[in-house]
Length: 368
Image (cartoon, rainbow, N blue to C red; front, side, top):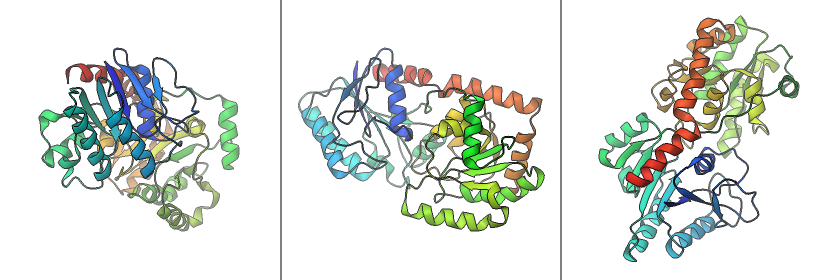
């Protein structure tokens, strides 16, 4: 089964959940033969993965119109292989192009399976069925599947396969000390990390509001908000958050784009991701899966796809007092926390590892 992945260019930097998902799936498929779309001159992915230089540039979080046109031309005019696997957020332009390419190839006799993985949920689920062109549509959590069913999508069309990420290597003490030095944090300072958006949802604000309560109990801690500047609104939101925590001085750090998120994760004692809006992200963000694999304590928001990380601690969205309480508990250690983090490592292996996800997709390509 020759499978063509249709996604953003699968090239570095590896800081995008959807293209990382494609890379990790392609590298771990056993029965299917994967082909991915890349940019000219990119480093080989390796393994059994074939690469086609469809894109003309390395791309960004949102591919350009020219880039999308090149993808459409490849689908309509190139060898369709045996199956297509789209990994995109549903949107009107991409879905219309996919419908057009699928219809064109069908008219010429192609009967390959089309799989559509919802890389990140749309802003609204109203009318979402018109954006779903796959013979099979994959939601990445039961939460998203439920929202799709509520929007009128047929249950027969839907499958659930959790997202995946390669487990990062543990860091040495020298690397961890270097991270803390770069942050201006003492070597003995426990790091509380929020690795999410500043401008979307209430997650960053909840962490900022929880900082005072946390630091009153554990004054040696350092709270780090790693918020990428993905939109024009992000810089404004960060300034608002800085004003909110102004009295706490350098015990709350804003680091923006992180050159080595892996090392920052290793240096962190607990990950806080009380995100009530994951727009633009996979259902369980890459950094959360990597933290799970590293055995880090996690404090997440209830009522959304993050609940699939069953070994984490959960708070109601916006409940900064409860977040502070859970962070203090996590930094306190103990047998209960050890059991939770060990359970998280097992959960990663059983649900969020690339080998598990690739096995599920291997089956899906063949049987639906």
